[in-house]
Length: 97
Image 1 (cartoon, rainbow, N blue to C red):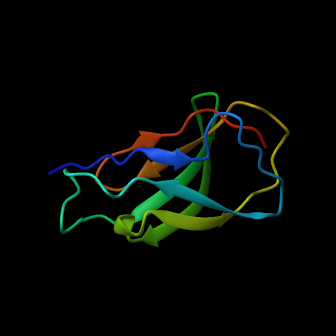
Image 2 (cartoon, rainbow, N blue to C red; image 1 turned 135 degrees about the vertical axis):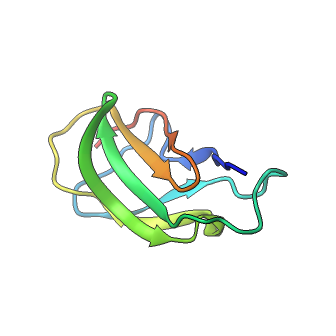
């Protein structure tokens, strides 16, 4: 089964500051969440739909519902997105760094 959990945070209106530690969170309490997930999780930072190739976290269990990441040094902008990979990819709403 493919599971694509909804990203809870960051969301529209979220502001991250370079160098801070923040949580990326997603909903794990859904009926379609599998007992076993074959792939480890990965969180990637994108901007305006473009893949920046910046991996913020990898090799974590998607069933935890969150992962801590350090906000990287990037240009200020309001069209950043998080892509959560595991069984499938899921993209957050745009937010600001």
